[in-house]
Length: 186
Length: 203
Image (cartoon, rainbow over all chains, first blue to last red; front, top):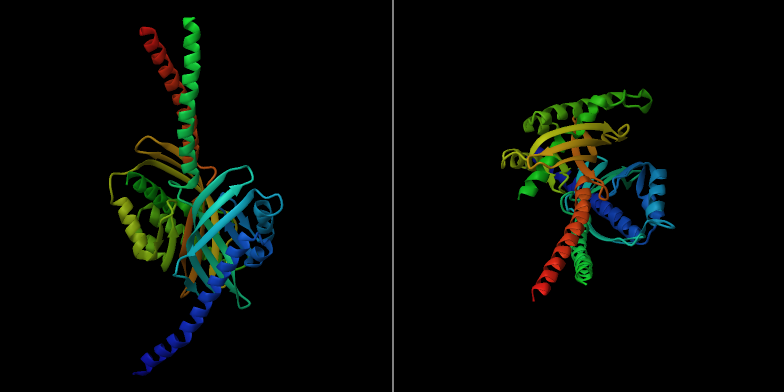
């Protein structure tokens, strides 16, 4: 083994366990966020974000900074929330891309929403997250959520609504027509 | 398949123009610090805009990190330069063109946030589409990117595009369809009643 190969092997042996530790830590950040969402634990969610945290939410809101994040979470899952219940299963892609003290992870989550206005929605969302290591702790610096613009739960609900409207309209039209033509024949 | 091609091409057009904010970005505020890096980031975004506007995939991928992750509007994820290139080839060199006319106005959401040698930037776009099948719509979209400095050079490491789940032109069209379906159903029901009454009268 020449000197260069030995150095590379040494570097790999030293770096690989460190990266595995970072991966574990990042996965734990997401697991804790997932638990916090289920339990509506806004304190843990805010604590998992950096001070200048960026979030682009599923409803297209851009939320920058911890105070804005706190207000958003309060609106969505806090007291008198827009979301009555949320069940979310997060599937994180196995590959995390490390760039020094930042890391990029992505994945999808399957969510079931029950909104305060009665709407229930199943949705698959896709996300990209950038994490930063600050004081030996990984925090979420940015997270961007999206969905398939051309195939999603809201479009499905609207299509089902069209079928219901067509059937309802046909029934109403038939009843109205029968009454109308019966009266004309009397 | 046609739908897939359509949405993929739309997503590609996002890449082409999402960074057009560079032209309309506000002047740099020196108080924000790291002025040199901020200038370099603007140059990077201007260059990727030019490259992608010219559909020059070689120039565009040259500005991306080899491990880039791109999430498109159709929720497809391209990982690495080869997948981005394959996506581009599939959309551009695929079937007949789907978009007839397209224009965009993009904006920067705020100053980039630095984390060591990484930076996060975001913004919005307003895009107008005229598709070959006659459909025209305007899309209000969001984009975000993470850029990393490698050997003194900034590269795009992640790019993500999205729209509002609850307010977008495709959903608005689908909701319009509910009204149309209801009206068509009503008319069909009325017609059926007329036929029934005629039938009864003939007996």
